[in-house]
Image 1 (cartoon, rainbow, N blue to C red):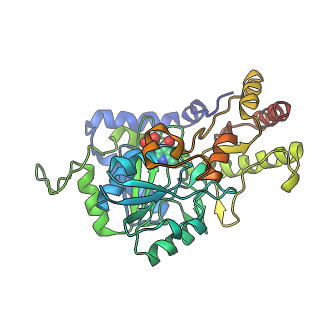
Image 2 (image 1 turned 45 degrees about the horizontal axis):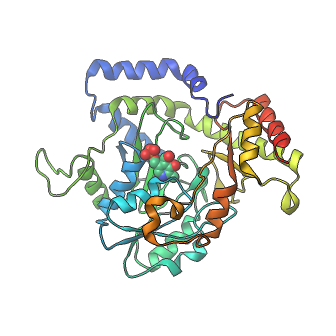
Image 3 (image 1 turned 120 degrees about the vertical axis):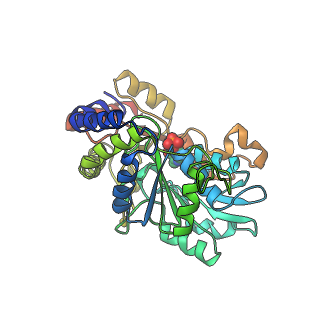
Amino acid sequence: MDFIDLKTQYRRLKPSVDARIARVLEHGQYVMGPEVAELEQQLAEYVGTKHCLGVASGTDALLMALMALDIGPGDEVITVPFTFFATAEMIALAGARPVFVDIDRRTYNMDAALLQAAITPRTKAIMPVSLYGQCADLDAINEIACRNELPVIEDAAQSFGATYKGRRSGGLTAIGATSFFPSKPLGCYGDGGALFTNDDRLAAILREIRIHGQDRRYHHPRLGLTGRLDSIQAAVLLAKLETFQEEVVARHRLGARYAELIAGKFGTGASARLRAPEIEPFNTCVYAQYTVEVDQRDIVETRMKALGVPTAVHYPLALHQQPVFKPLGHREGDFPASESAARRVLSLPMHPYLTDEQQRQVVDALADSVS
Ligand SMILES: Cc1ncc(COP(=O)(O)O)c(C=O)c1O
């Protein structure tokens, strides 16, 4: 069994993927070809924003968003310590200081109740993460941001296709940034990402940053990157978009079935022997990861591997525990919810083509592995 099976999806989409890639090879516009604009239009429509930019990766999307907001040395950007490294890495790479706000233990996303206390006169932006495919509480975060006149960047790398109160992830904040890394809910066949905004001025700045800060050929009013999405990756994404919503629905169904199987083996509520994901009633989750919590995780992982079920840990260290962030001066215990999650989380195989039988096998193995 694969942790994420991309080959079954390719077999299903092969005629369309192959034809679209072949078209790029024929027309030869490998950089900023017509597929990029076509994809951007479809993605903007899907997410519900005025602008979308295809970019080189989710990491570049975050960096470009920070650059567009003129964030640099002396500035603070608030984010969570329980996320993929890139979130805080890009804040630091932009020259700013990542300021951490702990997560809500139920959802693994920013605890909005702790946000106001972290804001200082140096705060320049708030970057919540919609982890595992479920949006952070963005209305609450936007409201605090608005009161403090701060922009919000949603790190939607794991939540493309998710909804929050009926609206799509990526389009809920000043800027939304997502990733099309192959294993993401919508993934290409290499690196890719996208930025979303309704703000014309920010969109124009982001377009400049995407091509070395140029406003016209060889004229550079600002610094930028080689931040473009390749035409071939755009072609792959256009093919995958044809069935993406069906896959999102499959993810909802598979998430519900995992919950049912786990409840059957481990019980529900406070007395449950294993913690399954909790999805807020106003959210739909795309389960970029289906992540449970267990005691003695190392033992459970080893036992499951022996039973033929791959698992993964997203993520084994909270970011304030990473060596490179030592100079921030945090100590063990500063962010207890993040530290506890980092010790206990375990992600199970999850992709839209998982079969009933495979899900049963995963949960049986889990029951045999948890002591
Ligand atoms: C929460 C989060 N932010 C940012 C990224 C970075 O995206 P990419 O790998 O496309 O650079 C990822 C991807 O793993 C992620 O999960």
